[in-house]
Image (cartoon, rainbow, N blue to C red):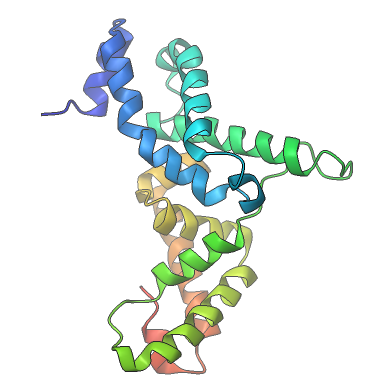
Length: 208
């Protein structure tokens, strides 16, 4: 049976290199998913998310002792923060170098493909084949509604549905309470429902 994260962290604190490697391995795929969701498609054609994950884990290895002393965040939230910084740096280097007006730490915009994937996840899957055309229209309307959401609300949906993060993990990343995350998540879904209110049947097909 695989050791849980807390046990591995405790062993890593004692200098157990195998525990450290197992700990990183547990989160490798989640980090790869997070990076793939955020990576601009022009960069994705040239950069493998797995390579960026390896860069993140190298940095995490270098900084692990400091993390273990201070524990500023839950472990995955800390790894994700390093991954976010890496993705931001890559976008800045490759896409923003000639745009002096862009802030140095500008966050990468969510790629259109990820917006479309999020829309697909938010549209329930119980429709019959006869509703396929309606579902395509619904996906398009949900994509538009997602782009019209405030960034903070959309980000909660991305973390919850694309990154598959728990509410408590999202709270640790955003620095707010789990209750506040739940409120933001519900508010974002309600705004999607409002955008689709013209068709009650379609609105019911967006996940709650």
